[in-house]
Length: 487
Image (cartoon, rainbow, N blue to C red; front, side, top):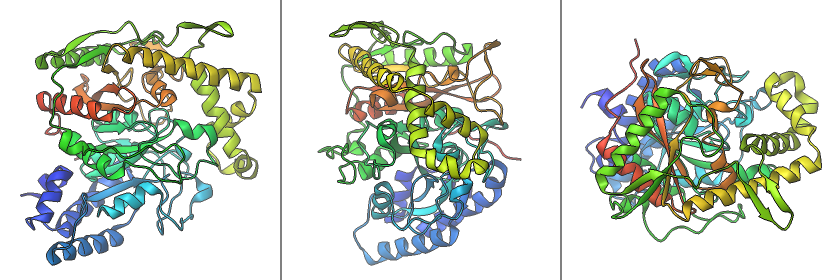
């Protein structure tokens, strides 16, 4: 088995080979470290490598195998962790110069669970400051480049994680998603990313994040759907540190993965009632992918139920929903500004100018603006739930375009038309507002060789069906043999 085959092997296969002593954790780890040393200077996915720690953890993993000790589900598997996830004894900068030398004294719950499952930590992956935008660059480490085209963005805010997985320098990665930050880079980099149901994976103390924290989900970025199921088996379950955390399911996602639903009703939408523009290649790729689901004798039809620009009658009378991007923008920028205003006042000269502008905008919203946005968020949630009264799954594009050029924060044009700042990511953030589970899966390639992602959204608490549908699609349209080339 050559080194590239090892680097791109699924984590589930790695785990089996380590347990059976066909490969050692140290052999796998050294192979990937060697690849990181060659490729990371090109794409800048890792900002804080931890190779000495990785070797130490791999050696201990191999000793445990030889002694016949009980092994965790991820025993000996090299893994990367996003740099806004706190790791005990490992620098965690949040992508911000202010935290350049910050070393946490405790692990977040997600890291502790990964450690308990036996992972080997390769290092921390790059993120924009505090994950505030959908591309990955910051004043501390610079941009993360797309492995498929080094002149394009990797997306964000888990761009370092997605680029590392795509490039074969991280078998597993953990990221976070507050508006699409797992699904955006997964789509741009051609990997599988899962945003679980809100609360499925516990978050650290919510007091600092406030209601902004109700947008944020931790989740896996991987090359194989089964690896996401394996990680979810490890990460799901309650923790008293998070009042919103959910009970652990009474089944294994991985074991249930092969059970394709006998009957399923899929509704798809390209506009969700408010999206006005989409790249033609993206639309065609996703439509071709949607049609593949008919191979399973599932009902597949256009959904008229998902309309996030509709109006509602309630005790307050008829209320027209504002455009969802404005609802998201008000809540996100105000929440971010409120939690960051002390930092802003003290360290303004060390923060990204775009981040400063977002904070200033967020601080200027009135209480009426904020409460109105919160109310409209609930209407958006209700409209999404209306779709799931009739359908089991919602399919959309993940994004309105393939990866755009490096050095900008938003797509400037789609289909030759100039577009507003959020036009390219309208498909992702509604499901942060609602909390529904959603995944991005590679479904095609643009004419210039960039990945295109399809979003698979599930009903509340139903990551299992999202994973099963994802696995079914993966079986008839696998993408893993297509790999970035580095010269």
